[in-house]
Each structure stands twice: as structure tokens, then as C-alpha cells.
Image (cartoon, rainbow, N blue to C red):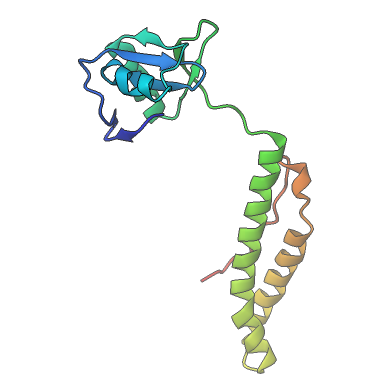
Length: 158
């Protein structure tokens, strides 16, 4: 539960008391405790934090850190977790698909020029280079992520 606008959560006046829940990894302004309580949503593990610590956490989050609960249930900054093997493979598959689409976009007009007998020698060389690239790209084993050696994109691309 964190709505941010211009670096500051909506509805939170920095002179208010702020609470943090490790269970939800969220911040709760004390001014809304009645609303949360009546809805059955005030976390039992809520701990009060200082305005200064709250500002520090939000500033750290804005530069790529993540907010986590420490062993005492208090919020602290941490580096984002490293991607899992499954996430790395998914990223590699997305990249492979993107590169394949781009290769196909380049290949289509080159192939048209050859098919119509209108290709220059340079276009014929580019067609061969891009087809070779596409074959090598198709052979990339994404399950090897992140240790993938991607084929080099042909030069002279407009």
C-alpha cells in the first residue's frame, strides 16, 4: 500500500505519525487508523517510524533500492534481489524475440530486392549477412542465461 506522487505518498502529511508493516511491506499514516481499523485493515505488526527515516526510505527507493523488513520488523533499504534463473531465461527469450523481429524487418526488403532482381551487390551481401545472423540468433539457447553469447548484428544497417 504505497501511492506515490512527486516522491511523496498521497494523503501523507510529513508532520503525521507514520507506521510500517513488515507483513504488507507498506506504510500507514496514523491519521487514517480509524478507517483502516473499521475496514479490518490496520496491520497488527505496525511499528512507528520517524519522519526522517520515512523520507530516507523513499529517497533510497527513488534511486533503485527496495524497502524490506529487517529481522525486527522495521523497514530498511536493500539492493534489489538478483533475478532468478527463470527470470533470466524469460529476459533472454524476450530479447531473442525482439532481435528476431528486428532481423526480419531488415531482411524483408532485402529479400524483395533479390527476388525482383533489383538488388545491388551491397544488398546481396547484406541479405547474406542478415540471414546468417538470423540463423545464429535462432540457435541461441536461452536456457543458458545469463551466459549467452549473442551473435553480432551485421554492420551497415540503415
